[in-house]
Length: 388
Ligand code: DIG
Ligand code: MN
Ligand code: MN
Image (cartoon, rainbow, N blue to C red):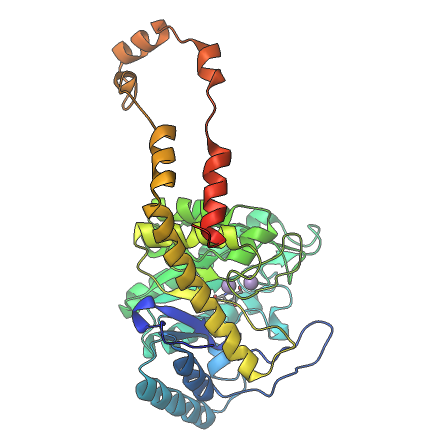
């Protein structure tokens, strides 16, 4: 599979943990040999990626000595310089080490909560050192298996206190960094707090510095919650809070599959790409996904290329949809407006309300109208099937 149509300006990024996944799962051991961060940078450069992201411990193992950490950073930086790959985003692993078995910021143990703050401050420093301007918080362990164990209000307040503290840290250090909060409804915890992008948007407004925080919606996570991913992304965008995005795919009602982008729900992927391109979303197109466990590293490259190629093909399909005369004619008919009711919309005035209350509507006639949506959606499907 070729990468000739993939260029840095597409801003395709991958986390070290995605193409570096060794294929471990709850029922099986690794199937691929690990690669170093530097080797993964060269792999991503080979497929045409723009950037690479990391959790602190994807780059520096949690028990690395200062000398080991320095050597790893040196090799990583050399690979970045040799390939031109950027590091747009960084994040903290607050979920793998056993200390986080009952959460990090929401843990019932103050020693864990304090350690999580320390680890995150150090990880923020590391991300900024490599040029990250977005910092993701995914609270993978911030949850419960039993609500007997934690008061949800206390958990929310502990999360808020931690994020407020870390916002102040970023301000104190004068870092050019903004936070992107990533929701997930469950897994690895039975239930995770702030379960969806919608929850996160509400939570952000309760922070001391809400302007410093946005969201990092992930396809698989909203699909796990049975939600329409585009609607959550659109709400975040409209609120000026779409600071980052995690692209992948997911069968509903399954564990977090983190499949190759577009490999499960092409129609949902199409409308998402159409939206991101039409609104001019400027951020990275980050693929938080991994290759099937069946694959070797050639298959991992196929996976990465597939994510990017599908995105670009759907971008071309969106342009075709917007240029299709029959589709555009249908949209014009569906949205026809003779302007006669315009005086009733917009800001409230008592006169407007009085006039609208007296307006005569022919309810049955209005209800009789057929809306042509079957034809519009079929044309959309035909664009996706490549026959238009
Ligand atoms: C899982 O979807 C999470 C972690 O991989 C990481 O913290 C975040 C960054 O994209 N996504
Ligand atoms: Mn996921
Ligand atoms: Mn993610």
